[in-house]
Length: 381
Image (cartoon, rainbow, N blue to C red; front, top):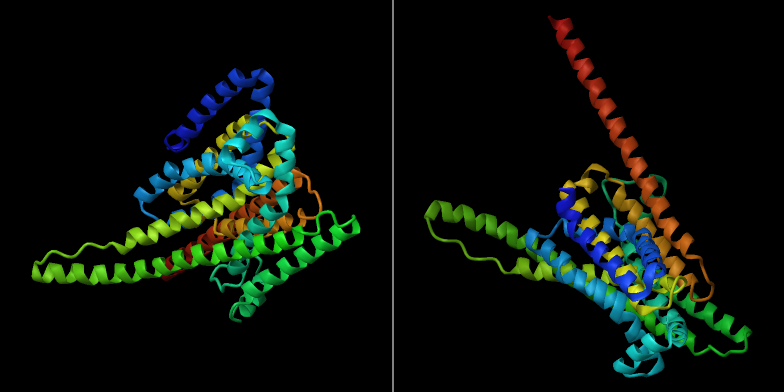
């Protein structure tokens, strides 16, 4: 099972490390290995959240997620995305941007750094909306009950998460403008960029998430109708009609997963520049890490880990909220990548341990109940 799920990741790792050695020697291999670990540590919460969505999808769409999805994740976000950012920010053509990335790595890194406020605002707002919609929803299972119960009551207010997200964005833009003004106003125009990019992230979340939710509801309705048609077909002997809504629902859930992965990868792409500004080594290292995140997502689904450890999804969403705030803070301040990665790992580890304790408590309660039943039976005899 383990080899079947992680087989492609192992193969890509071997090929990636060999390519690194051929490209830049043993030093390049070390850098690629470090980048891979960085990507996995920063994206572990991504895998947990992805698993919560992927478990609703069919085996076919899980395969699409691992094939076409990984191409989008590795080549789209880890290779093409940094080049597109440079092309847009420096007003260069795609070929010129690629040439710059390969021939003038320092200038390329500087252009990506200049584009960071826009990247952080877009990704930060998208992730913040995921976190807010999660904590404002009333759930049967609560991890931090003292916090989640009052927030669930507040969540009954319409559009509360959107209002809070816009307030956070406005504060971020104003803070960045103030910071720029204090330093001579050389980047004061970035405040408008932050505002527009953040709104873009918010709109993207609402469109993709809204369509995904809409077709998911349609899928549930169609499944009920399908069940009724199946019962009618058994009684009358007529063939039942095919369902096409499931494909639309799965497609938009797949699209939602890809946008989610893109938002998670922002910090990994930006953080990679602290290690190397070589786009080839970045693509190799982050690509290997992305493969393991994908495989880990499928592993969590097939093993039913989220059902066994019920607080994992809570921990991952709190990690998303932390990452969203970190991205927005990095518009003004530089935050070490170790902090960015460790916050998510700590929150998920905490939620995992809480789940283990919960399972032990439930097992002990069932054991005690079983003992009491046996005592009653023996007493009756």
